[in-house]
Image (cartoon, rainbow over all chains, first blue to last red; front, side, top):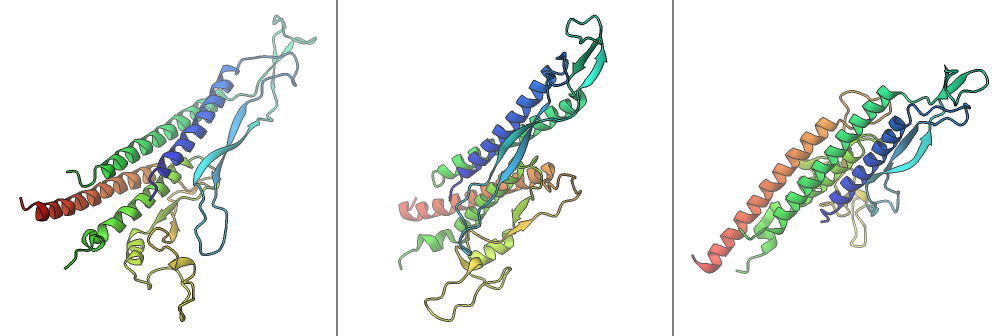
Length: 142
Length: 137
């Protein structure tokens, strides 16, 4: 029996959710970073989650796989930057436009709440697993 | 008559094992609550226990063994710790193909934790009984 696996699983979940929180923080912080060109503008970043799947080994023998979640990559949003007419802005181009990143602040806030709830879930799993493991260690003592 | 400790703790040791395995599975479901196309899994506890008790009629297909050299096949390999896993039926389908319902998984995890502790209590009582018999007080 390897109850320590629960710690690895919950840990991987916490790591993945904190990556998601980090990207959300980055997106929110840069929501108003305008740029002179459409190409130079900040692009929203989002993580891609992936379940670590069991590799099919010899039939009949359970493969020694580590179930968990991992971040397989972070992609940059391809949504086009929005144009704003701000002739007074020193970053404005020849026509008086600045380019703002296509960051949806509401979407990012929802992402943040979802990530923090999922993180808390994993913390609870870890706490409960720890309590159960400690109780198992005390088996026969009282 | 020699006392077999395995027999003495009887079904509780197996139950503890299955509970630990189920806890891992649900932890995995919760860790993958936001993973697209992830499908939540769970253990059928009744089936896992019946299998561990040597009942070959429950669930799954196993190869019949007619000679001593035969290997039982998938479902009989390490039956106690490797019972057939089931997929959870989602209450509401999600657009990203994920079938984890965080609330259901949380409830299942809590239930599993309490039952794990109940099994521990049973085992503790067994050991206390044994100790009383040994010490005579």
